Image 1 (cartoon, rainbow, N blue to C red):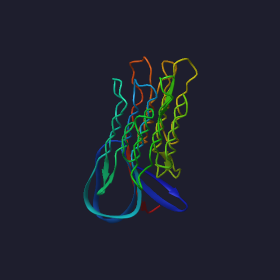
Image 2: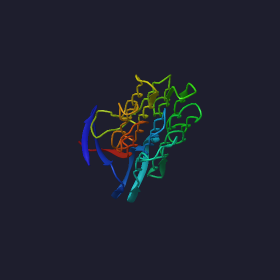
Image 3: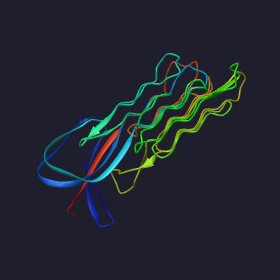
Image 4: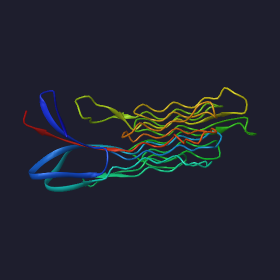
Length: 260
């Protein structure tokens, strides 16, 4: 629980990085909220793997609460699979104040934001209106000379399509309430993975707000979404056993005005 003053108004902020309870001991108030679901994982061990989509992100103002206990569920991010697959697992929903943010889609899956496509044979996932955006398309040249996964969608923008052997960038995130007067950026899409039978491939960048970097064979590992941003993980293809392109857990923030 933190407190800050912005433009003459003092706010008390309850931040949930994991599931818990929001207690209103007495009286009633109007609160503002930020609810972000867990991000989806990038695909792994597949030439031109898609990035994971960000968890759905919802904000609201003037939600009336009265004395009682409110259950808060913060969705976990999806872990990257340790087997080669075109798909990535979805994150988990976040629920607070009777509002549900939809889990981010793993590579090729729909969700709050959709995961990126893995090559041209696996379509990108669709985002949920008002919560996020679609992932970008994957591509291959045929014969597996080059391939690239699409970036996962973010709250602020669609994921970019893969081009040649360069993975698509994850979609940008968006700003929301924080624990101070500064408004952080959350819910970026994961970058897509690149592939080239020779050399020179590049993974896509993660979207602003915490999206994971896409990988590129053994030379560039994918990375996971930044914790508690609901961002998607990067797609990758490498000989590693670390499986780093996991989605990030979500977050719930509730704030209300108090006397200075």
